[in-house]
Image 1 (cartoon, rainbow, N blue to C red):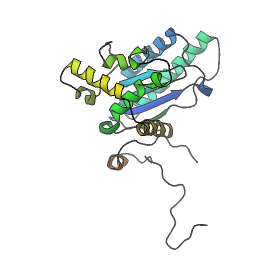
Image 2 (image 1 turned 135 degrees about the vertical axis):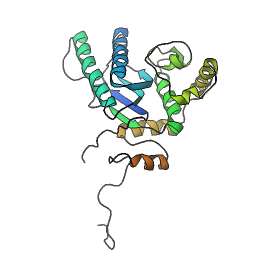
Image 3 (image 1 turned 135 degrees about the horizontal axis):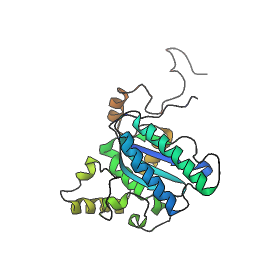
Image 4 (image 1 turned 45 degrees about the vertical axis):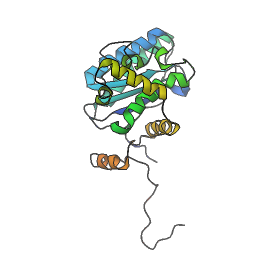
Length: 233
């Protein structure tokens, strides 16, 4: 079956996952994490992509981002990927590929899944047993949202601003969301949709979105539908 093109629609949040080849480490030192974040900051600005959340794990990373054009996200990821591979190979005195093929991504319905996706991203290090609490992990965007760090890399989504009327109220409300976590069904939906490239949202949302693109947005049965009177073999 032919591989579907990536789903990229400007103005909508996209969940991105990129893994190391054969699950090999892609970050081995603090310098690696910092270099990657510098690349992310530089290229998000260059290609006009708003970064809402991220987590850098040892052998993969997640982003939640809204591109402002249909080419912005692919161009940003390509620029980061190429620069980081050169940096990593030089630092490790190695050659060859670093990534497990092309990055995986999908578009999500903000009203239903954006905050859940942020929580899912923040809790990756907790699920992996690296830290007891999300706030203890240094290589995620979580600390921006609970008032422990400032910077220009993160662009909060409007739904985050709606959590409270003051910075303290928003920080407390978001910390409570992370403490509550995401359900198993939400976690599965966020992972599965991104790895397979299906739009994640309610049926009405996906239906309206389909009017903006010829790219198939959800899983359908393979093959042509049976014509009237024809029986399946």
